[in-house]
Each structure stands twice: as C-alpha cells, then as structure tokens.
Image: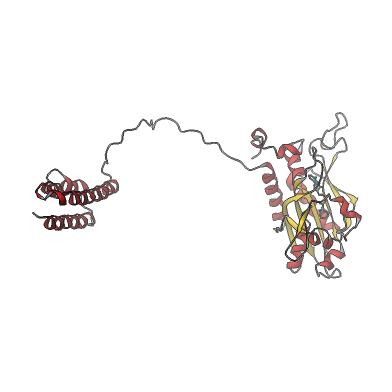
Length: 351
Ligand code: FA5
C-alpha cells in the first residue's frame, strides 16, 4: 500500500468509527474499542501496515494515525462514563470513609444583624428603604436642612470637608448624618413619603466607648396630611417595643435640631436594669433608668419649603438613630470600638 492509499484507509476508518460512536441507541463502547483499537482492530492493523511505507513518509503518517487513535480513545472514555462502564482504574491514597474537614461558617456582623432587625420593624409599619451618597453636597447635608452657612448649629456636627468641588463647582463633604436623604427623597417624590434610610456617616470626633468618627445611622421620614408629634411618639414606641420587648418605655426630652420643630432626644427605658438600679448602680444607664438613643421631631416648615412641599398642606416627622448604640444595647456590648476590631470571639456571639 502506498502513502495515499494508507491515508484514504485511515480516513475511512475514522468515518466509520464516528458513525458507530454517534449511533442511537449507543453501541457498546467496549465492543467499539475492540473493533477499532483492539490488537486486531481496524486502526491497529492499519498502523501495523506502516512498515511497508517508505521511511520519509512513515513519520508523518504515523503521527496522523496516532492523532486519530487519541481522538477515538477520548470519545470511548466519554461513552464509557455515560454508559456507566468502568474507566481505567485510578490509584489514590484518598480514604473516602474519613469524615470531611469542618468548614468554618461565617455569620453576619452585629451591625448588619442590628440594622436588619431595625429595618424589619419599620417595614412592618410600611416604611420602604431609600439611599443616598456618602460624599454629599453641603446643600443637602446642611443648607436644605435649615442650617444656613456659618450658622452656629453647624458646630453640632464636626465635619470632614473634602478639598474638591463636584463638576458644577459645589462644595463637597463626607455626610455627617443620614438626614440629607430626606431632602433627596422629597425633591424626587411627591408626598406622601414613608422611608427609612440606613447608612454610614462621618464626623471629625474623638473616639471613645460611645463615639466613633465613622458610624452608622438610620433615618426615618414620614410626610402626609395631618402628621403630628403624636404619630412620631406612637411610631417610635411601637418600634422600641418590637425591638426590645413589650415592657420597653419611651420618653421624649426637648432638644434642638434646625430641621425639626419641636425637636426631641428620644430615650428608652433601660433594658438592662429596667429602671431598678437603686441597689447597684446600672453601668449602662448610669442609674437614671433611661438611655438616649436618637434624635427626632416634627419636620420644620423651611425644610418642606426647600423641597417644594406646601407646609400648609403637608406635615411630617423625622428621626435619626445611631445603629451602633442599638447594637450595643441588643448584644450587651459595652464599648463601641469592639464592633470594629473584627475579633471573632465577639463577632461569633451574634447570629
Ligand atoms: C442627628 O444626626 C440628626 N440627624 C438626627 C435627627 C434626624 C434628628 C431627624 C431629628 C430628625 P445626632 O447628632 O444626635 O442627630 O445623632 C443621632 C444619633 O447618632 C445619636 O443619638 C447617636 O445614637 C448616634 N451618634 C451620634 N454621634 C455619634 C458618634 N460619634 N458615634 C456613634 N454614634 C453616634
């Protein structure tokens, strides 16, 4: 047989193998293997015929023949796997009877768990979630919230100013509270509005057990017809009882925020000593029986006007709470810094 004849025969064997391998129902892969690759198989015999081909052509043809052989072997392995026929035995030191390695299981961070729990309470009351940027315009963080430039109320929130202006030349800063989301939402939406807005805030403050320079707040805003301080009180009381249990009480202490009138600091009855720290002084409420948790009030008419809401027609309440303070109460954490140290012994206790 000359080289051309050998090549034609190889091509015919390859085609015949392909047709047999693709048959439905499939042919027995062992029988196919024997027919084409076995000692007296069609391809094996053809490869043996190579000895009659002149040496200079034998090398190329041999390589061609081996490629076809490899192709056939790969297809046969696949067919065996599908038909469940045993493949070549694999030697392994793996002991499949041994128990598996324990996989370390992650859990949510206490701040995330706290935020989720707070979010669930408010979603039951019909609040939806709104978000805003962390790098904020001075206008949204202060001006539209009734803090005019150079007003002394700005000193209440020590700010990180950014040494950049945005594309339209506006002053930028790291937001000091989540209240700018109130403005962004009202400017984009017709009333009624019922939102909560969780997120990170920044203040240039010294760090201690109850203060951080980066922390988290959750804002609440409800605008509708005839909303009053009584609605705020009911909402926050319902929320605190849901979170801390039905015996939790809420009280409002007069306070000042330029964007609400009247404004209040809201305190919850101490969930640790339940106001009974007469014998041993409670370290959390310092014996007062009350813990301050958030700021709140009735939305100031100037804020409504800045958002083109008619204060004669619409009114509302707003509140802003520190998520870290709630996490500390819920999980008995005495120092806020523990929440940021990523010590697994602390983090693993919260699920
Ligand atoms: C505000 O930030 C107001 N925007 C809240 C508000 C919203 C009032 C809507 C009225 C209406 P204040 O600065 O008090 O208020 O912060 C609110 C809460 O954030 C505090 O009660 C406290 O829980 C938390 N907080 C304040 N400063 C820090 C800090 N440095 N580290 C951790 N938590 C803080």
